[in-house]
Length: 325
Image (cartoon, rainbow, N blue to C red; front, side):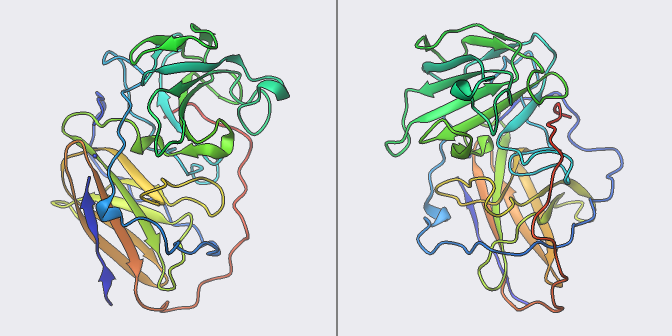
């Protein structure tokens, strides 16, 4: 078997959480593979030449946790428990002040409870939210950040804001099941279909970086909802974190990286990425550098050893969004 291995180093965050469990739990059992319907576009940029866009600071001061949930990251649905996630959730207490991640102008401040103010897939999805159009544009496209489920809005539409300025208080409105901040990045427009992965926009903390990657089969199809585990290189048989690749036709990848998964807030160091599909395991070494994105192309180069099992056409998720774990 030949494994395609390609890496780049191109992207830091602050948390007081314990990074390594005392006893690593077994990884989640991989779901039955889904049909593959999206091929890798021929005209996407070479990720080895991509520049990062870590433009934004964190939405809380250093006094509070600022990392997104490891268990419900962008582009996943917590094993079918929740909605496909179009942002990241940051665990917070109700009433905690939220700060703007960058300079810009407020374009929405308040409820999203009517069709005219709708920001999500239906009215009252966020309950209340703040949306900021940022001063800096990406390839001449406007960039927005959304702060959802807030209990109180501290700004008004049309108001200029600066990075670090308080804009709202944490809440649990809309579809949230508890207080937390739901943060989104939207590119080119303000609709629910304009989101991008915030992990690739929020500046990593010193000493930390981000892993992004793409899982592809031998026919150049993306492998959707595919389990990927992250292991420290010095303990390769103990998985440290896990995630799943994005579903087909549900969430957007970055316009340059065309990633299908990320691991944010990873301490600089050496790691292994592992995934198994089509009867073969891929093991990809990767080095994380402080303040940078390290990219891994995980691609099968041979036909499946065994025919793929029949699979459902889609994964259905119940209509709830959790508080961050």
